[in-house]
Amino acid sequence: MQELVRTNDLVLLGAIEALFTSADIGHMVADQYMSAMEGYIGILPRRLLVVDEDAVRARRLLKEAGFGAALRDGD
Image (cartoon, rainbow, N blue to C red; front, top):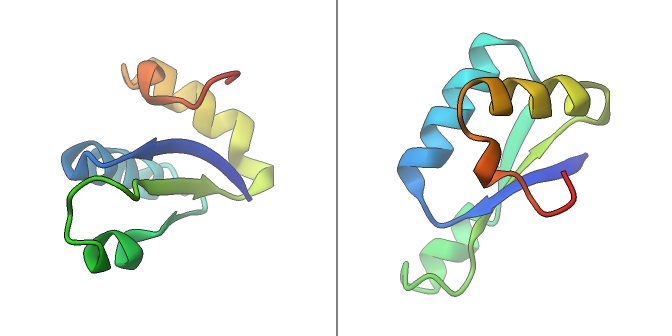
């Protein structure tokens, strides 16, 4: 799996998850429960991961949908 987005913005994560689900892109949000344990103060951002086979398509879809700025550096 490849990490595409790391953020504390729950609205952004929800929008990207909906986008990936509708495009049938395999994904998961990592660290969501760790973020809850630390009290939602922003120390541990959530990470959005996609399966390797869908990574190129997922990056392209994020850019086309206007979420390109949320991509991790180097993407």
